[in-house]
Length: 366
Length: 254
Image (cartoon, rainbow over all chains, first blue to last red; front, side, top):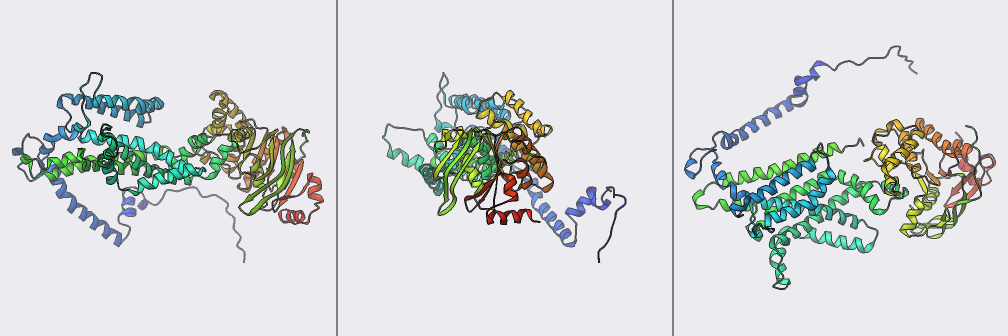
């Protein structure tokens, strides 16, 4: 039997029921929507309090913040005096104290450039990119290493957070473009180009980073003439860059594969050449799509800079570790490693948040 | 829909001569011979898999043919990249799935190729783009992104984007097949207008009303070959091949 229905007046919109609104609604919806969920909420809450309270007590409330020697560390809490007294070497390594202003200038330039490049409201992004990629590396190199009247500071005296940031920045800035080129090469229709890229990627992805670093520092000098001397840090930098570019290539390739072939075809039909199609149509979309993967690789790279410790480069973590065997400060390893964890976490979390911000900003409603 | 006046001349714009193509062992295009004169409007129909899309994609080298010749505006297609890009500059194409660039605004979609391929100054490219967007009645959306537009709007932008390169020929590869029924007309109206202005057009489509109104010739393809070719009047009223009759019966007979 067919039902006949006809609506004479339309229903106007109404507000949702009160129990679904505001704080009460949120609590009900998310924390106490049923007996099991309520129990889980209470249990997890209790566990969090049980675990966090002692940590906060140790790190903040009972902690010793001011002082200048071990004698000041008498309380039950953390003794941050230990970190404060070592801060100079943690940041600059063995860089001569009289020359540390040069590192400070590089830090300041680095931060200014970072803000210029990364904050959308600041204008002149193209200039910033050029300055960042061409001018800054040269200026930073001469400031850190010397020349033009500045005293020469060999790279074996570089260390600490400064060295960590040098390795991470060079690794990040070098591996992304190289990875993009490799990814494009791996998808090339030319068998030779494709073959070279596949072999390169699979080789570097197949060896552990530690092996790469060992090869760079120990094996490489054995294969070249004795007077042919390349700086150890430079060798490590090149190794790290090549190693991570292989990972980056695969991340970028996954993005390229997600772009429908129609995009490249539309570009081709409009007369765009290969590099124009890639640079203007395919890559902007593909890279946007794999921002999480790219930043994931950046974060892994940043943390793995700590491996340079094994070839005798003293990065931030290496200096923290060296500090634990300082005879006048024995027994403060926990403070050291907690501080190290905090510093690495701040950098990594910063990258993560920034990438999410960029993702939201580049969202184009599709 | 009234009939559109023929404006075609005798100058050949596209010549396909004994065109053959294989996908591996599969013979997808078989001895295609077709000449399209300047200003002519051709509609190509046929069952799916009959090679119609492949054929028009050979004209701008989105597909490569293995035997025969493709000659566009007097230039013979080769594998030479420069030659291919030179031909593509004169051949506009509209796709079934629009293929707008989602990361660029409507306006930038239209300006991209004029600026980068023809080196048109940005300001002039914007003016041209706005003119064509005006003509497809979508200028008010110029600063939106493709993802914010309906399918019909996107396809009209795609047509404007092609026109910005001032093509001599327009290829349409099932331009209304991915559209909701209520949006088909707005796209067809733009195409009819284009035909009235004398644009040389090759349309793969199943819109038989459009074919009757606009086409100078209708071509029916099946199994990679041209089965029947005639003016729309004769084609629809007196189809000769049983295959054509069966096909027309299927798409018109409900």
